[in-house]
Image 1 (tube, one colour):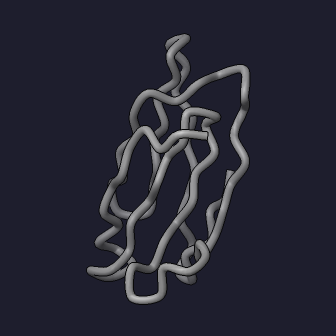
Image 2 (cartoon, one colour):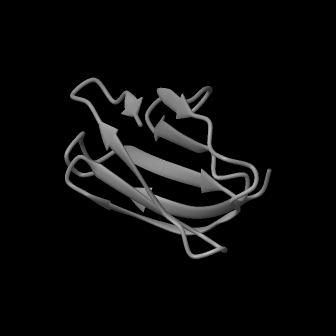
Length: 81
């Protein structure tokens, strides 16, 4: 799907970005080695994402239907529902 949003993840370091896709999938990227994501979380395709925000180790994904989903980032960059 199409990338709808990019957010910095300063809790993990200056080179980390979270990409949110219209399918509500989320991928954490280390821009020093951008060949594949550090971690990936599959979203709910019935809830298309429109934007996301990262505050410390919490990720909020806003969906077009008004839902708000939350993921957590662990210390190694894993995305947890």
